[in-house]
Length: 580
Image (cartoon, rainbow, N blue to C red; front, side, top):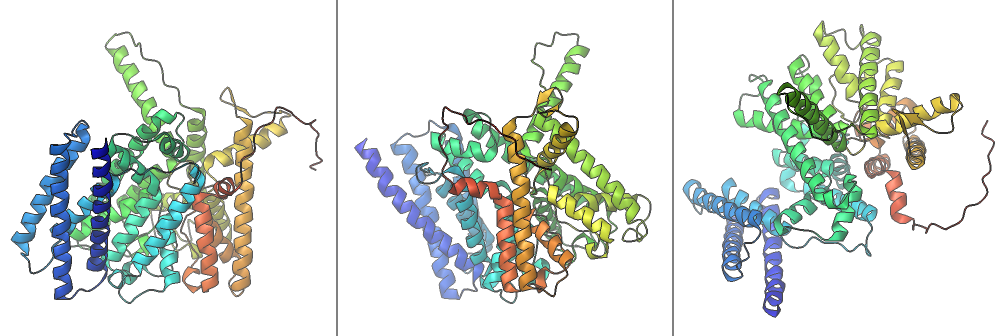
């Protein structure tokens, strides 16, 4: 035990120092223009980290025979093979004269393997799950802002406030921009934005905790409690199973989406194969995470893309899927699997001993609400804008563009039309759709479809004289009703405060434009009527705060900073309050 303790203590410190040096080398390498001497130092550092890392891995498994966890052993073995291949390609392609991408990939893989291997445990007595969630997003936003300020991330430099705004918009998967992503940022800067979108869309803790669990083969009880709150897992024992499914669904949908985008791209617009791949991956991640960032100056309005209806429909499918919510997707997959199994077994005339999987009440409510919002929104936009923004399209093009316009406000943020040209009444509809947003536990924002559905069912129940909400032979729990109305009221308070502050600091901007911007920021949509870049620095800070609050939710912030009270074994006499 003493031998293992000393071993873990000293080796973990050594590996941590090496990885910090390697990260510093990568930041200098990617972010700055290095001289020949500095490049030699970086290359020496890379090789030192790789060599010590491989020796450490060999020593660990030989000396301690620590190969009981098969997945860890296999991953370490594959990592070493890939690293050796990268080193071979480094010498084959560049020798020792300059650093190639192969060497960088080897170092990045080693760092990822190293930082996720040690214990990523947190003490519940130090931070509760809500506080941990908030701190992780704040840290990610700040790191992202600093990285975006690196010289090689932009073409002409960027101020801290604009870098912070862009980082917040990416991490909070909003899509509001103060500078043009395509022309202002280099490909390195765009890649940073893409990584921030991916990390923010799923939650940095989901990544870190799951990979820590994968490499270690287990996790602490406190980690599982934290993740159960963040992933909406019903059972603590199923936390990492849920996270694993989330990651599998995410990468599968993003890969499939990128493939479909690639197929539907016009090769004359992007001749290079690598550029088409990068475009597809960037937009698949941005769409699934409902971020709305694009490498096109005018988004889907860009010439050559605005009439590419298969591409637009593909992007719609991706961000609608991302906005459904992981619990809904997992539950729906199980239900479809049950239906298929049931009919196959009946076809084979075998007894079906499987227990039927019933769609959850939450699943039914969110799916029905989502479908209704999509259909109603599409029909309203189609008829109201038929001879306005849809006039340049014809036939199926009008339908696809109307569908795109009606679904993107539900936190996706992509645009295939100029929203400032919409009729006033259409803008009001868009604001409403932005406020409702996506489904719970998804990459989207807003008050969520379940909240809107509960509010609607509540006033229908009151109109019928009922004292409880009943739907699909189920009664909605009182705590769900109270949470729904808390979310709605808090959202209006935050948005109202934002409108007040921005109209104070930029009183020359029309109130409708400010309101549209604040609803878009809170619901992490990213649509704008064209005022974002013209806002003052103070108003940008206000929007940064609104985007952050909209992503983590005001209710989470209140839970994080208010101490929970113990439930007493008593009740006060109830009394009614005059409402109207």
